[in-house]
Image (cartoon, rainbow, N blue to C red; front, side):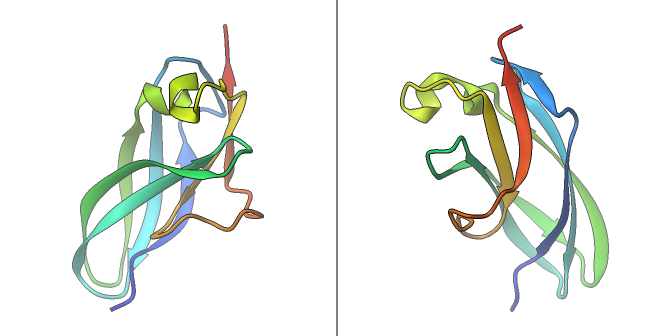
Length: 111
């Protein structure tokens, strides 16, 4: 059975204050009814890491909107081995994107 497909990643902001969480809306579709994990990946330039994974229910052949909150810890230095990211690319999928995949860019600011 094919996994649900992410059609769009819509973050609530293109820039966030370091230490803040980020709300994200996903637009997804699934060919068959299923319960499947939704995995968020992030890349600060050093490689893709899993940010969040949640199980969600998908109806068959429907276009669904799903809301998630990426925790503030995903945008802090300890998560990235001590390097505080200035930007993080977001992607959604079963496995990490390729190193050359861009994702949706979020800027992390010290304001």
